[in-house]
Amino acid sequence: MSRPVIPAEPPFRGLLFGLLLGLLLLSLVLPAPPVLAQEAALPVFFLRYDGGLGYEEIAVEAGEEEEIEPYSQRHRVTLRIKEEWSDSLVTNLTTAVSRKTYTHEKGSYTYFYLYPDLAWKISEKVKWTCGFRTKFTDYDEPDTDGHSKDLTGLLAKTGFTFRAAEGLKIMPLYQAVFELYEYAGYSRATQTFGLGISSAMDEVRMSARYRGILRDSLGEESTVDFRFNNEFGLNLSWDPNR
Image 1 (spheres, rainbow, N blue to C red):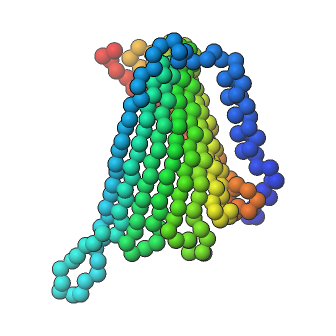
Image 2: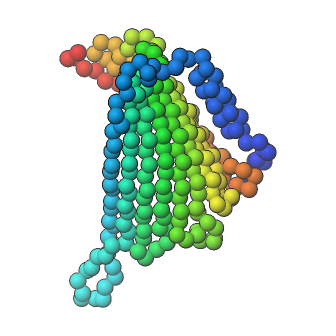
């Protein structure tokens, strides 16, 4: 089946523009967060290290004992700074650098990202969260076709929690990821639309979620195929002790 013609103006741009415009209008009509009404707490720092080593069996001559040797290693350092401006506004700034290397094969890479996010309790019934991440990934070698795999990833996400009634929460979300490869043929955009519902009635709790994930090419030179996935789940619990 032939590939559909890519429009000159990708459809996700209009959706993203509408989202940003809606958030701007929302910030104008909503009251400012009461960060000045109480003394802000001092920042809290979190420093984390993750590592990993992979081993594999190596070929030996007949009659010799089996041997293993390392074939990959991974190191990552993450720093998160959390600030509680008030009981209703919390921000985080997360940054990380990671390095993964392979001993006998290609694919070694390094990445760095910066990720600020916030959670704002606008009222007793409405909470808003959003975040923006910039990630740079650098590969040591090109792919098998000689194309660079280096890329810059841009992520923007936002979500709301509405307490519609006693014990009922509605949680819409939206996320957009733009992967801008040095080789334009690999560039792509992924959008996620989601909705979650949570309900609690006495000893019965129920939650449901839906995710629509749309992936498409980014730019006229991209050769990424269109794809749309649907994910959903349902959870039900009963606690007679409540």
